[in-house]
Length: 120
Image (cartoon, rainbow, N blue to C red; front, side, top):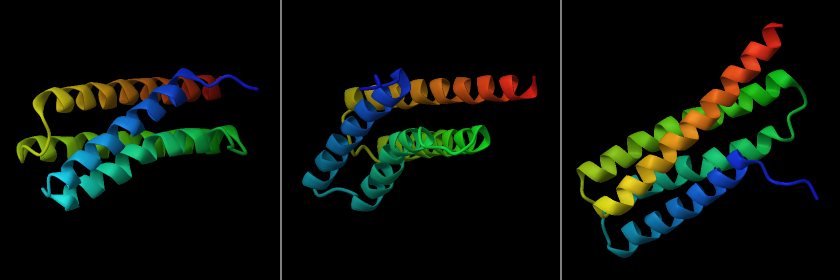
């Protein structure tokens, strides 16, 4: 069995945290619209990373990683809105912000490396 990449593992762990955060927001009967948006974008990061593993070309691989990067940026936005509306505890928000920032850096680095290597 092929071992899982760091970026795949981290995006999966982040998605688990997003699912739990979404459940806490819903359980508290707070803003369900923001939690749904966070859920969609936050879990989509890992889904797109996994999908990139089945890419049919280098360009398709880069495209799918780019979508994951955009989803990470969107997730950061929803987290800011959730924070501004005090829908989650500060410590949990801090952990989620750090997680999505790390994913943005990992995905961004992978995209930059792909682009540098395709120029050669």
